[in-house]
Image 1 (cartoon, one colour):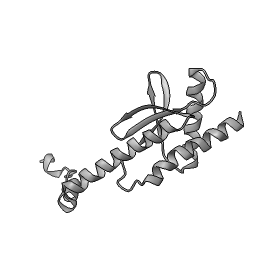
Image 2: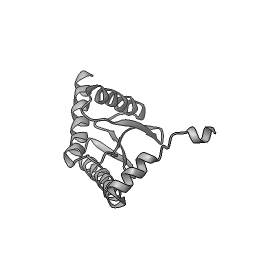
Image 3: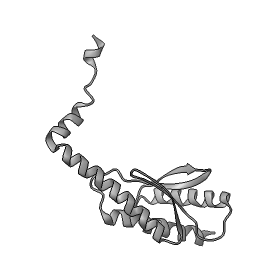
Image 4: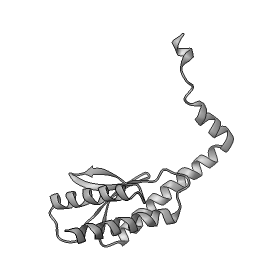
Length: 135
């Protein structure tokens, strides 16, 4: 009897698939993957940033300007992330790759635009400049 009282969690997805169709979902996923690749390209073109990994729509990178030890880079990137989240202009999370603290952007919104992607790099550089000036 309890199994009949459970919510049908897949119903929202089923309705969305029926209404929009598989092609719309495929296109949205493809756009997210293209935005992730575009962000990776922007990061590679920016001397102060180092691309660490792109996995599907997740992009991991670090701010690396100046001469720093790994521990200092980890602390610096952690502080950059803290301030980015505090400012609220873009949302990043973190990942640790090979004991290195990384900034992590994950593109998952079908409304993401190219200008949103451009703002990620601009925001990281602006916050990094603030952190450098504070030290």
